[in-house]
Picture 1 (cartoon, rainbow, N blue to C red):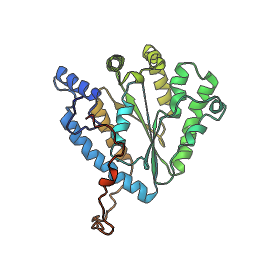
Picture 2: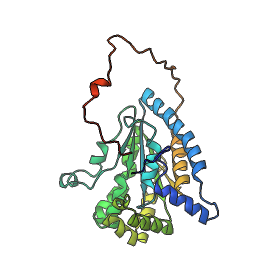
Picture 3: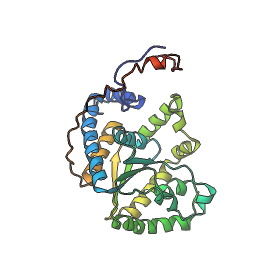
Picture 4: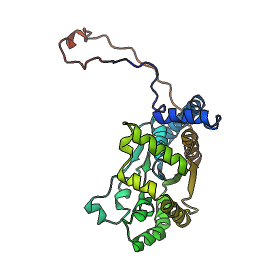
Amino acid sequence: MRREKGNHRQSRGKGDKDADHAADANGGSRMKRKAYEEELRKLQVELCHLQTWVRETGARVIILFEGRDAAGKGGTIKAITERVSPRVFRVVALPAPSDRQKSQMFLQRYIEYFPAGGEIVIFDRSWYNRAGVEYVMGFVGAADYRRFLELCPQIEQYVVDAGIILIKLWLEVGMEEQEKRFAARIDDPVRQWKLSPMDVESYRRWYDYSRARDKMLTATDSKHAPWHLVRSDDKRRARLNAISHVLASIPYKKVPHAKIKLPKRSMKDKYDDQASLKGRRFVAERY
């Protein structure tokens, strides 16, 4: 195999290469990779400052991402978390509920993952599944659906009153752009797992999801827990705008760091620690 060289940054996925082609086709209307990576680097430095402040102050933050399938939630979350500690930034992406969980109070399994002091929890889809896929696909009855929309703002008021910073983001992708992304997933073996039968059905029900989105926003866009929408046809701009909004929504400050100086290595009991590895099983160097 040919060994690939260079700086393999996680932000450079096939989707970003597709975005480069789209930019060329659209006369440069979409953000170029170099400009994107320069701005992302600046924002990721700020996310590291935010991380230190959260850890030092014991702040608790919830960031939830909602949106249609292929709206760019996963890529945005990856851009947020790729340079920070998973001990501070925790990502929660829950599977379908078990039979036991179906018998629980609806929000119960989400509350279990709420942040403790010094944590930021990112929900890749959240309790708003009830107002989205469950409602559109008929997995929830009309009475339970209406009750959720009525109670959700009240529950979120309790969350905010408890001192948790709650940030709600909806990624809004256009119909044509979603179709392009679905088509790309069909042909790409490393992204085919992203296209489930539920995703295909959601593609068919575009306008049902639009109506569900509008009902959800009308009922749950409150003063204490507002929704903010991010246009996500341009993945790069969407990621930068989402991260910028998160940073602007939290009153963090830069925490001064004491400069670290590495101590001298102790030469006491020095020995040839490579010779002792001779004969051990190393992974084959195929690259």
